[in-house]
Image (tube, rainbow, N blue to C red; front, side, top):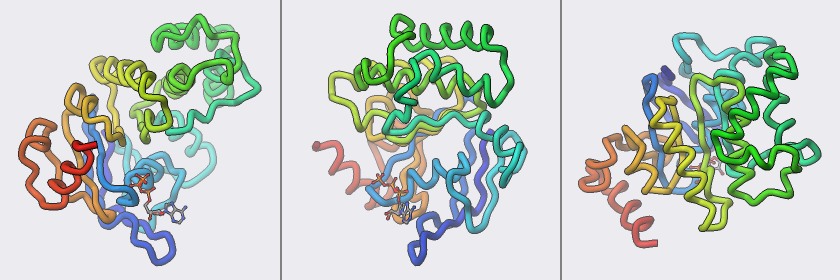
Length: 242
Ligand SMILES: Nc1ncnc2c1ncn2[C@@H]1O[C@H](COP(=O)(O)OP(=O)(O)OP(=O)(O)O)[C@@H](O)[C@H]1O
């Protein structure tokens, strides 16, 4: 379970997160949407400790987020993150990209890490690309490798920050399908996306952010048919007409 209480964050004068309270239960899939600049990425990045917070608390299964050192490495293993840009090591093979984390952070033996990585690559449908370099793969395949890499650490929660927005349209579904299957397997997920099809299919809850605040939360069904706030209504009318 991920719990944020009163999380505040400034970038200089910009108050980018304003008292965020959010609880994500184990096995829950929360989709975060909102206009550009509303703080969605920053929210993800604070949960993964890529950004510090000014005040408030963030806990994962009851443990507060560590600041530094070995504990930070443990946290990085607890939180699997998938970014818009796949962030794979260009000069390592697909297989090495997936084995590296567990070998370094968890001390997993190479043979065991390889076996686990092959199973994960199979799960995301790219096992036949294991010996290639990332640049030899399509964007959709690279993003699926990035998902496998995040899963390799056996995370407690997976964060996705606009995972399909850098992809050509025909590759979006292959990545979303992997995410839907993870959701159905009971993975705890926080997903920043404007792919409303994913939200409808897999989300338990939609969280709408604007101006660094959570303005509204509801089930996808309620949110898409009857948003309560004017800001959410305006936002939905813009994205759904695109
Ligand atoms: N490292 C940083 N330094 C200064 N300002 C930042 C930094 N990162 C983000 N910001 C600003 O904080 C605000 C929120 O950014 P954030 O990326 O969290 O929003 P977002 O909702 O994810 O937007 P988008 O949908 O465009 O990715 C924006 O105004 C952004 O310019």
